[in-house]
Amino acid sequence: MFLLYAVYGNVMTVEPEIKITSKPLSGENPIVLMGFPGSGLVGSIALQYLVEQMEFNQIGNITSKYFPPVAMMAKGVINVPVRIYENEETVAIVADIPIHPMICYEVANGIIDWLSTFPVREVATIAGIVTNEPEKRVFGVATQEEMLERITDHTVILPMGSISGIAGSVLTECKIRNIPGYGFLGETVATPDPRSAAAALNVLKVIYGLEIDIDPLLEQAEEIEATMHKLAEEVQSAEPMQKKENLPMYG
Image (cartoon, rainbow, N blue to C red; front, top):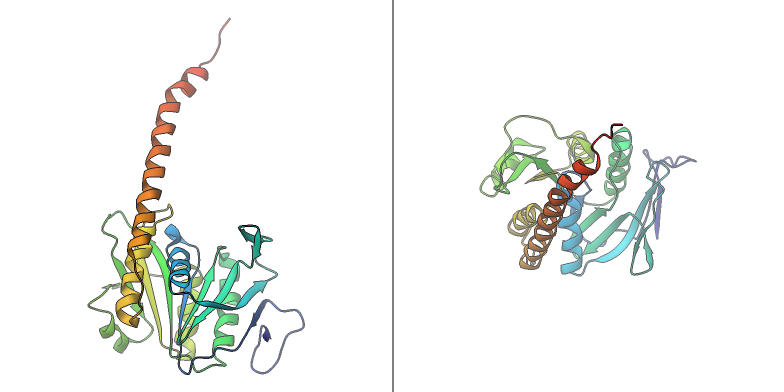
């Protein structure tokens, strides 16, 4: 197992800000995909689906004293909230917890520090971007202008603006260190959005040649939408009664 305590150069700090416990990456020139919770949970939904469908192997975990004091659980088994997976030449870093803006730099710096010890080909972050449109487009950015040609036919290139949160911090670190980096932002709303995650996966599927079936994720989207529609109807039907019950009393 590989243990990293927030490495800066060849010096290890005594009190780690970011701790990565992992086997070394085995690929000769791997790509690294990252998905953290954000708008529509696009990144985390997309990559969790990817690692399950393509049967990635979990090789490590990321922890930090700044992460929320939460232990994730599935079917009675505890799972670390930020995990590292691998499948041949593809690495996936998947998170179940949002990263607070105050520690985005530390998390991004720690992860890219660790990745820099391997011959990583490029890094791609998957996130969501809230718009008022229902099209589920995928917007694309790159750390170098010449890299845009590769994604122009598959994404909408963002002409101007900013990318916040951990996705923005990761891309900034890639830019500074001259590591090729892409950002794929699925058009979404504030609620969990499997359709946007599916759209982002379709882009990854084409660009990286991933063999993955998106249809089950779209079926999941229909189930979530039906559940949300039912909840909305229940809320609307409950509102008149709440208003009646909340009438002021006189006398």
